[in-house]
Amino acid sequence: MADTFMARSTSTFAGNRSMLSIFNASASKVIRVYRIWSVNSRIATVTGAITLMEIQMLAARSGSGTAVDVTKMDSSAAALDASVYVEYNNDHLIAGNTVRRVYQATDELIPNGWATQLLLKFYPLGLIWDAGYGDDNVQPLTLRQDEGVHVKNIGAATGGVFQFCMEFTQSAS
Amino acid sequence: MAVLQTWSVGTNGTASAFASNRSMFDAWNGTAGATVIKIWRIWAFNGQSSAINGAFAQIHFLRTVAGPSGGTALTANAVKHDSTNAALDANVTFGTDRTITYPAAPVLLRRMAIYTDEYTISGASTDEFRVFTPGALIFDGGYASAGVVQPIVLRQSQGLTLTNVSTAATGSIDIYCEFTQE
Image (cartoon, rainbow over all chains, first blue to last red; front, side, top):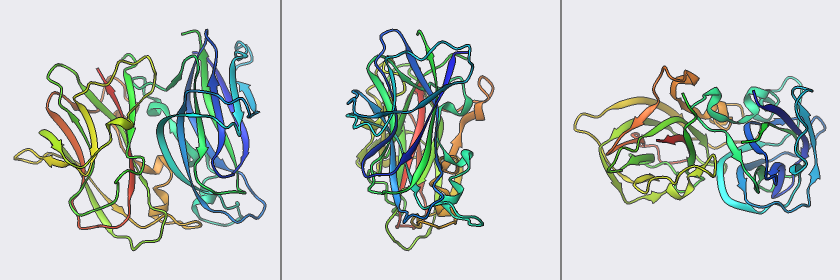
């Protein structure tokens, strides 16, 4: 098994914001993104909106983002290469490559409700990218040197708060 | 099985509006050689956020036997999952609203009803459920049974269309297709 990491950010919606990104600037490591989740975690009242999210491949990193938590799945794994940047709210330039777009509803969670934004607290329903659904035939999103991927709110929604997680591996080839 | 060179291609909102008897998405392998396209997964997301009067559409998964024409090409939307993959064969194309040629005896792989109403905040009906990626998964080749179950295989001069065979003409969908080339 490859060394596996979980990136996690608590991301507040804003128009045209990169909610979570991984950019690989390393010449010696390959990053493979297997799964991405977008899960509602806002419990304070907010006026939510429907917003459109895109998973986009990146060809450059702007450098203006905020670093987010990255956790090893096994403490014996090698450290994440220092040239792999995991960030929130980075004003990335995109390569024009969208691999998926999904709508999300950013209203807050309430007890006893039954609506899409409430169902988005369940990780199985917040799974917005799943490489091959466990199929070894299908490539995950592979990030070689100077390549990245991010989840971007291309809509105008503001105020909601979601947990964004990316499960990825690091290997030499 | 080894990992195969993989792409994702989608409508990205391009001309994915429902219309009667419209091919909402199609894939065509027009290669003259041995290139094989395998379709592993297809998602159909609700792409409608402005208010409409929805209707029930019937989507049929049908084999095609000749190169499509007209419509809107989507091939440029195909994204490699790994930049080191070979180029996609120039005769492999994807599109929406293209004119399709079916075999004399139609080959129907699957049919599916979709309610085309818009996605609303705080809604909780089937049209809302299709914004969830797992809820939008309409075909999953082999369900990860690698080496056992075949995906939809497009050999030379073979294609697949997802055609709205109903009269539903409101709403839109975003279709994404995960495929390999070998």
